[in-house]
Image (cartoon, rainbow, N blue to C red; front, side):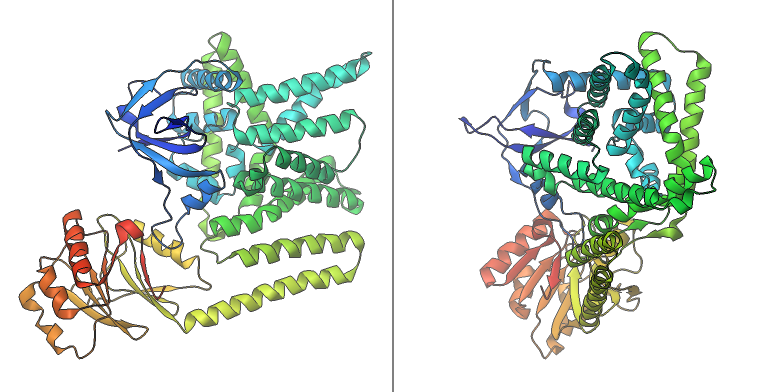
Length: 581
């Protein structure tokens, strides 16, 4: 069932006033009225701690939320809450209401859902309605920054405002008026986008830049970025751990470096036409921006798109005109019905952008996925890039040697981890509700013990797990034993037994022939056996129950293990089981 998630402020808990933030999740079709900013919800439901990921390598929502100072969540079902409508006053409430009204206006202009969802993202910062497949194409094309209201959009709006207000310089107090209008335009843009955190951050940065230029402080863009980041961190130190903040300033720092290098290389511009100079600058700045975010992209997402240059050369030159076209259509539609030819033109233009993104994102051969990139690599790569740029500025070879040393350290660390991995093996019992996947990792080979094929979900779990390990891996299906009701194999000298629904008490005579102690027993698909008799007979060290077992079987197994003093692990409660830990 579809769910909606909101950030919520906790006002009271157990009748006592408290302060804090939580995630509020409820079933979308249970609300008589849509939630809006300022509403209050009363409930007796208890808060739950945000859990760690259920499978190794999966997205760590707990860590992500902790960076926002959120540690708990609340689930609501029909009849479990009372909604009290709040007063729709205040700047943020007005901004959100304005954003919602503009979205409704867009819905009257565009008919196709894909083009409408992209228009809402480009113009109003709402990406919730973009289809998953189209969103994956944007990710693959390295063009997600086009959809996010951040420094790129605000920078384009800033350039447009600077161009439109240029004639004011001729007036007596035109400079001051120009600054005021630019700032009003920037913060008006933040209001239009619903005062999103990314938009506020970018507008704050360009506000500081505008003041700097107005005071004739001709410092470099890199200095202005450092100053704005320092001020924002003073206002909210938690921004330092915010992924959006890190990506934004890394990209802008890369752009500042690229712009500096382009200005420094006058020989590149000598004898070149304006068009050639423009595209040379675009290529250099795009490469610099991607180089700036590359360490973070590899660390957080374990992937990097080699298609960014193609998407930048094709889409960035038209993004400004797209924003002008889109806001013109949106503004005109607010006051009167625009001609059908204008609506169709806007529709076709967005369709062309979507088709281009799908074409670029379809070149999966140029997308690096599942890249092993731990935190140590992030530090070494960032340090190496900083040393390389410092060496270029100072014209001293020692910095280049130090940068190369960082690269060598990364290689030695990778070799050390790879050698240790090849000499090791591990048992992984993944968790998936209604599914079962038992894997024995033998060096760089995944041996699937209880299935002959991989579903899309299991394939993703293996990709996420392998991204945390160095090197490439291959999957091997145990076609001989996969369908047997019971399987025996060793992991690190420990004997493992996997039992599924086909096993019967009378067919377990093979256990009598086992001369050694069973270390781990894995139950899948709720086998019909006498648990107390079975476990009392084999006395394993650990019992693992995966997500394919029903709740009744899990409860019986837990109680039996407790009475016999056997370690019990249910993946639906503790996540995937790994041995050795």
